Image 1 (spheres, one colour):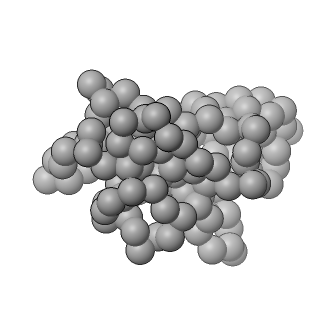
Image 2: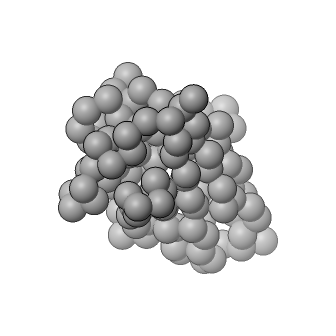
Length: 123
């Protein structure tokens, strides 16, 4: 059974940091590029970042470039999103997803999705 389970969300003050984790099961994690997305209330889901299967290549949306870092540990079937300098506009549900092939910002390129974890940035 395929599972992607995100964790690490919560309430954080502006300027703070959080690290999200996503643990995968039920598919060959180390062969898949992985992505992080988010969806704020009333908005469409937004692609944030992607990491190649080996972890050697990463990409970031302009909205988070320089503030977010993506990494993975293939031995633990886990992908991470380190979020620094958080802003209230970063408030959203964050999702991880497993790509069908290589990195992409198109949702249709992703085969498996987690249920999401809520991140709220507020003082």
